[in-house]
Image (cartoon, rainbow, N blue to C red):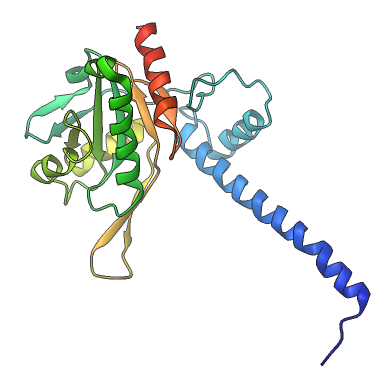
Amino acid sequence: MVSVPPGLAYLAAMLRPIRAIALVLMLLLAGLWGAAWVLRAPGEGIAESFVRQLAFFSGAGLPPPSAGGVTLPEGVTLGGPYSLTDQTGRAVTEATYAGGLSLMYFGFTYCPDVCPTELGIIGQVMEELGPDASRVTPILVTIDPERDTPEVLAAYVVNFHPKMVGLTGTAAQIADVARKFRVYYQRVRNAENSDYLMDHSSFIYLVGSDGRVRGLFRPGSAPEAIAEAVRGALRAG
């Protein structure tokens, strides 16, 4: 049996927490890089957006966040006009839902985990809102229009809330709305079978009657916190 010199053992023990801290920092920076991609301003490069997100994370010039959500940096806007098809086959635009607010999520029906979780949260928010839910439309926008036809969406969205709308469209239409909402998505091979999956960002968007984003919620946000933010947006008009 080879004995380890006491000095080396001490050094190894000291390096373990350093490695752990380094891993946490790497994950944090990766998260900030993803946020920089989603929240970059029009015409802003990814590097500039990353520096701005880093400054906001450190607290420099950070405004008070909305309840349960991510505060969009000044000058950053998400959302806008879109033309899609709902689960009944009807052509819709952002004006279709102009009578209130929308809780919008970008995902796909073949998603094995995160999409059902986030759509379930939206369903819980609708229940939490009570009578105020009549002024809110929950929406799933598919990022997989090849498989998510109106018929497929119709059978899927009712599992999460009776009011939930499923929107699809051509590949070009989905790419356009995803660009406006800064949604990342990409087809990836499923190693277990011949089907493919979709890698994608996973935020819940609170959208105003003009199609612009009022609030942005991280994956796993508490339904109560989202409902509080929705009520605040409803009061603001």
